[in-house]
Amino acid sequence: MNIDMASFTPWTSLAGGLLIGAGIALFALLAGRIAGISGIVGGLLRPARGETGWRVAFLAGLVGAPFAFALFMPLPDIRVDAGVPLLLLAGLLVGVGTRYGSGCTSGHGICGLSRRSPRSIAATAAFMAAGFLTVWLLRHVLEVA
Image (cartoon, rainbow, N blue to C red):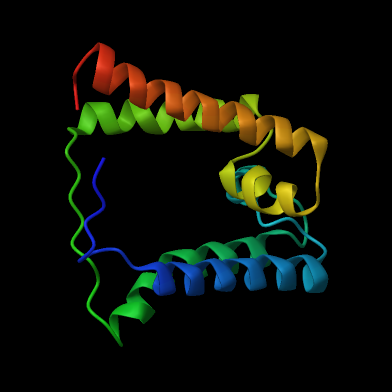
């Protein structure tokens, strides 16, 4: 594996991580909620009284952030080397995984680990192991990528 040093952005990555950490900490302190995206979206699919507004605002912020960023800097080029059927299958598997794991990477991996939740530690270890295994199988066994 080689690191493309021209594209290596440790300071930008650190700043992004600090912003994510500050955002979830403020969300937990001010709203008393965990910033798990699958739970937020799931709450919109089963709306409860008084729960819809903040969920829509949160998701609008996620969708709108790249557009706000684009006002100051050009967005990076996005290249997806997969067809629509594969992307649909991947999305379905992610959805099943978040239901099976009772949360997603943002809920368990960021919010849960920062709270030292044993359930989140186990979930994060499981989805990281599954990701490592998937990449190894695709690249070294099936030689797909």
